[in-house]
Amino acid sequence: MISRQAYIGRRLFTVMVGVSLVMLVIWLQVIHLQVVGASRPKRAPQTVSFAIAPMGTVVDRQGRVLAMDVPYHVLYISPALLDDTELPDVRSWLQEQGLGDTVWGEVARAYEQKAQTPVAVPNISRLVAEAARAKRAELSEEGVMPWLWVETRWVRYYPNRTLAFHVLGYRNRQIPPKVEGGVHAYYRDFLARCQGLDPDHKREAPLPGGASPFFPSPFRCDLVLTIDTAVQYAVEQELAHAVEVYEPHSATAIVMDPRDGAILAMASWPVFDPERVYTDPEEVAEAMRNRAVSMMYEPGSVVKAITFATAYDAGVIHENSRIRDEAQIEYAEGIIRNAGGKGYGMVDPATILSRSLNVATARVAVKTGPDIFYSYLKKFGFGRPTEIDLANEYAGLVRWPNDVHWAYFDLATNAFGQGISVTPIQLIRAMAVIANGGVLVRPHVLRGFYKQDTYYEVTWPVGRRVLRAKTSKVVTGWLTKAVEAMAGSGVRVPGVAVAGKTGTAEIAEEEGYTTQDRNVTFVGYFPAEDPKVIVLVMMERPQTGPNGEPVAALWALNTAYPTFVRIANAILPYLR
Image 1 (cartoon, rainbow, N blue to C red):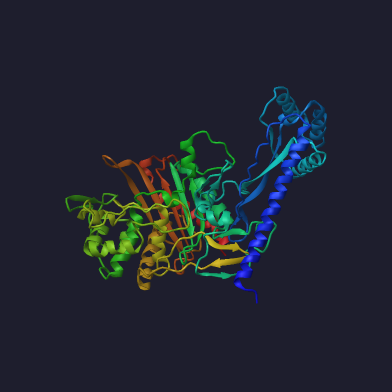
Image 2 (image 1 turned 60 degrees about the vertical axis):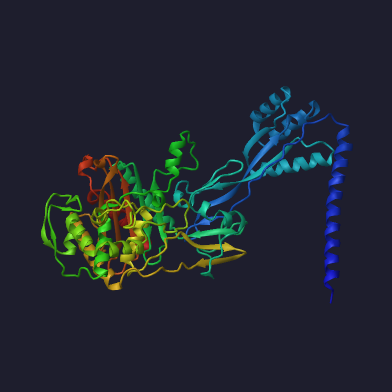
């Protein structure tokens, strides 16, 4: 057995030999340049090339490529390393490569002007790059200072351009590159260096979609997302249609599996196009913003579903409860009004949710009390990030009873979604609690990852229980009746029972709430009896309807809900 001292000595000897060899190579190269170069005119030093480190490939749940690195070759020709005798060779070589007279003209002009900056020929083909490297080696063997070289960079390629852009994020072509948003920013260390991704709950699994020429990538640090390209495309098409019809300032749609939080599609408008040249920094910022995770807004009456789930789960109301509804009531030095200006007397929870009655909802919240009401808001995940694996998530905003700015009037208005700010991802997760039987899930876009020649599928743990299973079933029944009442107009998902809730919210400004603009939301899930999919549609400040309706006539009922129906009908064939 070799002693520890002998082993260390051998290691040191090996290292010293290696270092000596490296130094010898460098020394010989210096001698070569000094001796061979002495017979030639003095030249400008060659520009040091810079290669962007590659990143792994990102694919959807079926193995279809969403983002990948491709080589981008740039040819450099230095006029400072040429003399008159070499110009014919340069011109002949350029013509052989099919680069034409344009490049030669640039080189000739630079040579005449004695330019020190090399002429750059961007985006040459792989064959030209190989020919350039061969030419460089040939010149070196002849003892001629090589006047050309190739720089290969790895650039990010998005085969579907804008598709799922806000989920993916972006790496630009600057040097050094900048990574922004989405999974590119969240999983940057893994994609670039195979570091920082080692979840506890993972298992080896077959490659989704099987092996392809592009996945796994040569870099072996790849991500598989929960996104389904077909579903994503359908959602983006319908969201674009909604933007055209309703002319909102912005729009968002999310499709999620309520059972585990897997995101099947996530789209925001406006969208950033990686291939487009932008000149306005503000336009770029708006287009790159993923509103699904970073837009905070008052959601309006969708929160009524949360209020009634809370009250039922806490035993404050039951299936046969009747609550008095009036056109308006005074409470805690404020006035609560129904949107339609009417009261409906003694009504049950299903009717309150179907007619979206503010007064009756406020009465339920007051009866529930602030301690129970706000403890459930925390359980539903409001006021803090969902921890979705996407960059730049916001936390939302809730005034809790221990806040100096909280007042009892907040209890009444928070019950119907006013005075509370959420993000779309927070809202869909909260509604998923009702859909899935009462547990809080963590929204996520990572399905698995390829590392060290092995594909691992990630199992995301289900969170804590928020509601009793019976509460989920009862409230789903109420929400199904609410959608049935809306579907009476003929706008429906054929053959599928849907549970859901609309939200039309006036927008808070310094002087109070404005009636000139509003935000509209619908969150629905199906099939109601055993939900597999939950969908959120949100539009900021829609300006017109399909028949030219003014803002005052625009509600979630005739904007967000019809868009939800179009999305549901479009994605059903892909959901099996």
